[in-house]
Amino acid sequence: MTMTAAGHAISAGPNNALTDVEGILVGHADNAAARTGTSVILFEEPATASVSVMGGAPGTRETDLLRPDNTVERIDALVLSGGSAFGLAAADAVMRALAEGGRGFAIGPHKVPIVPSAILFDLMNGGEKTGHEALYGPLGLAALNAASASEQRCGSIGAGRGALTARIKGGVGTASEILGQTRIAALVAVNALGSPLIGQTRHFHAAAFEIGDEFGGLGFPAPLPADAAETRLKGTVSGSGPTATTIGLVATDARLTKAQCRRLAVAGQDGLARALFPAHTVLDGDTVFAAATGRGPAPADPHALMHLEAAAARVMARAIARAVFHAEPEEGDRVPAWKNL
Image (tube, rainbow, N blue to C red; front, side, top):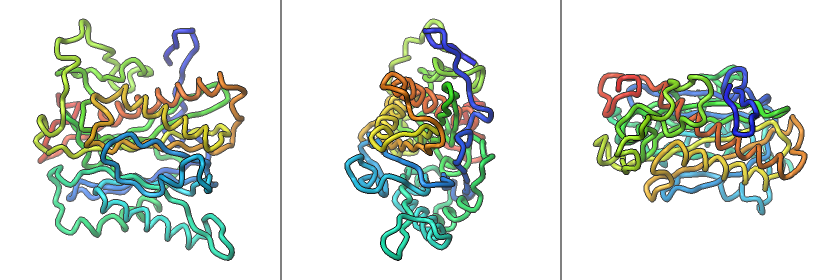
């Protein structure tokens, strides 16, 4: 537990995971040899959703549909994947499987599952990429079949299986928060061009938001090192080339409109920028979705909505740090894992 400046307690959910939001299932699948993978977020009932795209090199599907002024409000599932544009095939497989199960937006006699997706670029991470183009459909289906309400892992799994940052390995991270009668959580795949760490230290940019010692409990370095504001980019540090992108979801059980979900997604981007520096660069495709299951109460007023937005930024920042903190080292890594610094 931590405290806000106003003295309010901030607590993580029981599993500190996206699945703390009732009605959400999460599944991961990956390929160790190729160092790539896919993560699927499945909603037990269609969820109101929107998105914010702030990176200069996004790879996405169905994001225009999620603009507040466009027709469809609810989504059935969300797919995050490695593989650059090849990874979008994972969403095709998920969509087909959901259609076979009778899920989807009804149009006359037809049902069309709404499955937005975003991808990250992990093609130059050292994995065996021969024939990788055919991996993502099966990975998407495997992740969907693995979807569970108990999934809470972080680290080198799913869409973050081969993720890297400027100094260290990335991965998949998740975090949650209880805000009164509302739960809010994030899941993110961290493959940033920038760094999650302050200068050459082991300290996280996201330290201000840490609950307990969920990513090491180091706090901020004191004093701040002289290189704290220095720009570190993946292409010059890891040798893997300037290939990046951080993609994720902020979700809540609050009852929100599509426009309010859009504001939640923007707030999630704020958390991304607090945890990674630099963020939203011309070679990142930073994309944050937001979804509301509506199983809880609506925000009572704009003040309550602002507190929810602040929580969205916190859980995203924490999820990013937890992704890096839990990444596992393995032979052939281009950069070290955090635990080996």
